[in-house]
Length: 429
Image (cartoon, rainbow, N blue to C red; front, top):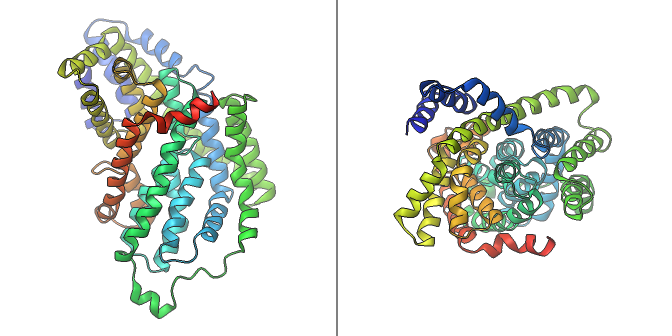
């Protein structure tokens, strides 16, 4: 109890998550008379001394290169050619573009930022209510971590010792289902969030000036090939996930420098610095979370929590519900990577005890934490959407609620129907 209270107190005081893990563990070990310095060094280094973890900064760098290199613009241009005939077109384009960009960036916040900066002004110009446009972008942004490659999935794979390739395949089914659900929901909701009077006066949506379908497809092909090369290489056994992330950087540089020509050689260093800073934050969290987790393991805390939960009920579905509730709350309150590293040692034994497959449990965890990104009050996507749109978070919450409800329904399907997640891995592995 002292260990957990120390961690929560430090987080509540506003310390960064990584520092909270480290300082909480150091204070606890000091109070109990242990040598905190040696354990901090050994456990923290061991937590990031992994070939698989090396893929994290590489994937982030590749995603940033493609983001600044004009990929999001081409993906949006192609999506516009797919939906042109109805008032829901731009909303559908936004959802589809978020899914496409998720296959490049692997990050929810990056997806909201990149697609929101392009599609937000477009939707407002074409008579979408500003609040609805910002809410749709914020909601669809979490597709960024459901369409592989996904940074949180890599973190879970490292924490649980699971196959990255299997997990990439497993999250794809829920990701595609969520994309389709959001497109259908947008078509249903657009009638009450569209300014028909202004559209009539101006002659409807302005989708003129867009390239032909063939040209839009041709321009988007290099962007689409990136996830094909990454995932195809992994699943065919040509290279590992870490090697794929390095290849993604080379391919992203080639596309951005020589095909799209939207960045130059002098831009690479600033992009690399931004990626390195973001990766450093995550790696620091992973290192100190490993240290904190080592202390929990020495205290048998994961087993004690698992025994307490199983003692509450022996019903598999009640225990599965409790796991989902814990993960959803953590997704609302914590950064996704930190939450995965904190709860995987605690909930993994419980998940195995009730018969969950490690891959299926990884999908349940990822989807819960993704839903937490759009669940008030501490919803990261809403804050990013607020920054991009210039609207207060309070005005974005209401438009997000229908998409949150749809996500909760899909979460129930993901949890109760393993086949949705396990079909592709079972076919290819």
